[in-house]
Length: 215
Ligand code: TMP
Image (cartoon, rainbow, N blue to C red):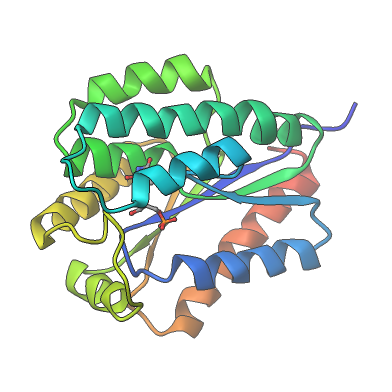
């Protein structure tokens, strides 16, 4: 039986360079011979991508924070069962653009849902599944928002106010500070080559762990 794969997540507010750096991480890992599943949340399955569309679309009626939270966990339940868990069990590594840290940051920090409620759903939907390593790309909200706004049409989340994103950022940083050793916080306001140099270091660390068999 193959050894279980590593579960790596990439997190951060809007416009912190997640897409560029996800692509960089993907090529680093693939070039190192890792059998990799690259995926995202909300999404990653057909049902999840349909739910993503519902979640991101700008709607006339205000969306209840609880409805939003449950749709996110519905997408996550399908994603775990259909993709993430089978890949990890088969020894593949999973690189996921956002996961439950985003729910603490956006739905709890941003929308004000009690973190204990998120924790209950996390336990219910994920059982013991948690990322092995989380890369948090951190940048001041003003930097991220101006990058995101330069991309054109804004989705339902991107239309939130600065205060919302300040709470999202503060929650992410708090999770990294109080959480287990799985977080690596990277200052994403630095030049791209500096950010990617740091990502390279983290990847090397993970690959060394694999060689030593200390996953
Ligand atoms: P993305 O465009 O960065 O992939 O993410 C889509 C949006 O979904 C982003 O604004 C953050 C939001 N989101 C949440 O609010 N909670 C979550 O748990 C996840 C995974 C994403």
